[in-house]
Image (cartoon, rainbow over all chains, first blue to last red; front, side, top):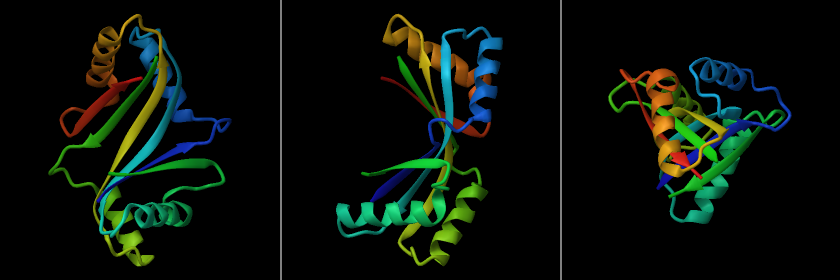
Length: 79
Length: 79
């Protein structure tokens, strides 16, 4: 199965990378850009028998390694 | 409009961050994980009148700033 994990800073946590990108895009003339947030996407193949088990395993991975849950939130997808 | 840009290393370009995550997940007992790739996701609000124009603008942003097209590929989404 194809697994996809997206990790973003929680709303309210200052996203300095996003602010830098927003400033750079404005500088290039893309003035319609606002509220930029930058996150990580982790994609991989996962050997799992069913979807439910795969999702549970992905959440476990996020809690233990992939996300810092103090400041980051995550979304998991299985396809 | 909500815009989403995903930037990944092209296939064949060594993804050291992905390799590190793969090793760490194996170390934690998630042995079914393979072919880990790590990318960036950039989400923002975009002031654009129609979908086609928004997509064209996003591609322009990727070519000029968001992706290093020598080693990275990108996907754009408008919602």
